[in-house]
Image: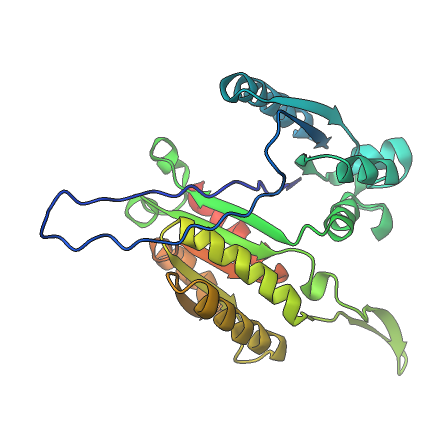
Length: 298
């Protein structure tokens, strides 16, 4: 079962001092990235997906119903198909009618997709292909993946309490570039044997836009941003590091930027996760690191 990443808004916490002789807390320039303009009614497409997805969506609808009453706006919610459910009904993991409905909505809420039932299908008829199509066609390039340890659930973690207590990490993962979408790719026969290849590629513009999202998120949290790459080996990572440094230095001077190689980051997430506040990284590294971070909370 592949759980859909939940995209949550970062909350800014203001800290003040009552000591007249204490230095003033640094002021942060809080920017605002809004998906849609404020209005009275929002159109929401619900994608329940597979497995426990419909059960998750049912609980979400109850919460959203309460939210409407509390905040004074309306949500018009309509279901659409994706994943295995879409394959069974339409022989397509993300039908065009689902895509069009999502495009015409103010927001899309996705539960989860996948299951053993479809694992032996050809690649184009696997639930994951529908997820990749949705990301690409809708330009969903920024994936915010939180890992926050709640005191009530701290014993659910497989790590020691003193390691995970207080952990609150936001992983900003680039979602529409990198080796998952790079071309050329394929499996060919060369000198009598099969050769598989993919292309790890990023355009400067793709790195700039995810860096700006990460800078915005970090400025609303603890003001620390760690960019994860493999610049000591990969040319694409060197470009990533150069562009992220340029954007954060020039546009988010209040954010403390650091860099870390992905292998070290994987180790540090287990060794000392509280050193991280906001992480920004590419598609494949973010896929792995955010799943690792999710296990910190149990």
